[in-house]
Image 1: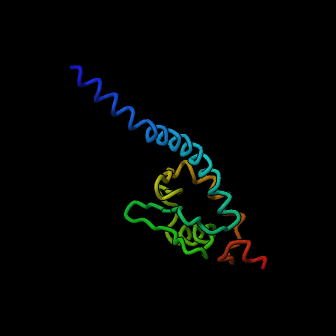
Image 2 (image 1 turned 90 degrees about the vertical axis):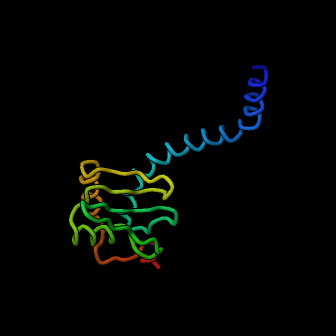
Image 3 (image 1 turned 120 degrees about the horizontal axis):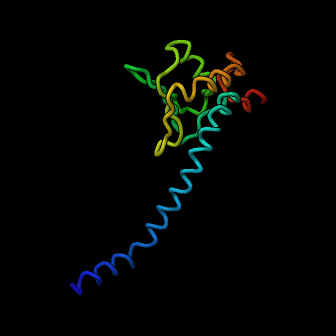
Length: 132
């Protein structure tokens, strides 16, 4: 039995930093999740492009469609075309590819409709590109 405490002690002495990093990243991801939820309506309204490490996926009962991350397509424009073609999805997956957040239809249908109401349907690019 004296060998067990030594083994535990040696494990603890070699692993505290990775555990601390995991805790910090978990705290950071919780903040990112709420920020993610708030940023999608803004991305839609501004018809901004999707960030490089983000994902926007609409899930329907028998298929799903993912927004291209090409740096050209505006989120609002893409959503309008998908909703026009396929209707309102069952689930919406949005956020960093490593930890996206999934919303049910009852969680996003009201704010997505409001956000899309202010998007210019003729625009295929982010507003910054329109100004130049």
